[in-house]
Length: 393
Image (cartoon, rainbow, N blue to C red; front, side, top):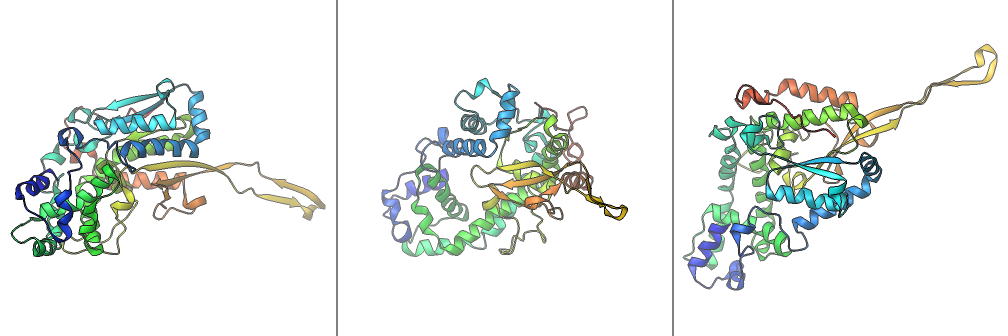
């Protein structure tokens, strides 16, 4: 986006047509070195506001669990070692625990580097091969994105050039214009950039973003599910333990870490793989639903009364003698993605589209057998941790 802004500044012309607004437009980030890759603090959709509101929302939803956590004195929660991630966790804690949250909760910062091995919230940073594999590693998503955007961006460039002859924008710059719409809305609340493009062009942009994450860290990347398995496996172990492990666990990381975990669980099975030659309209993998700004994924452990079996002894001459088994509870797992319940494929026969705990654990175990182990695919050095050990109260 900064390269696009500098290009616009160099032109020093009067823009016309859909770009006429640029004649009085100011870049939304006047101090890019300080503002880029940071939590937005202005506008009605600011990241700070979203983090605080999410804390309040979840405090309301899980008030009884919060009371249990407070009774245990200190609740640990975790964040990857990125400034915007840390600030998000802190502001969330203010909304969830209260202004004096540091008295009742403790934030642990987890390094984002190779030295953590598998004991990390950000496995992409801890996987050497993922960064060095130039064909199928981290850059695989960008490669597929570049192929697809060449199918729709050149036509936009020609349209813009009709009103502004002599000004040529490359595909990367036009794509930045579309990105500018979202980031400027976050910062200011509105953006003229959003009106530059048609509905179909926005749908193509949405698909481009889906491709990027699908092949960068999702199920379309050979490393993605292996990266996501670490957090999924550790979370499944907590769900197996239940209340004994603790009432609440909060972890904060990046959108790419969420998509990797989704690939490990295969929550949004996408068959066939997303093509990069054209838009696949009928698809399950849509990042606008799964990882919007402030996207979140919640695993809920539900304890529900089990069906009670009763019988009578009328056949023995005691018609009023009814006997019932002692009441018990069954345990289920339900997944909440950005306030929407997402049924687990082939395991949704519990209350509210939930999955019986044993069925969920069997699914996770099966996926673990199908996915290449993190330490093997990443070529992690011998002796480095192979899994997450810090998630405990």
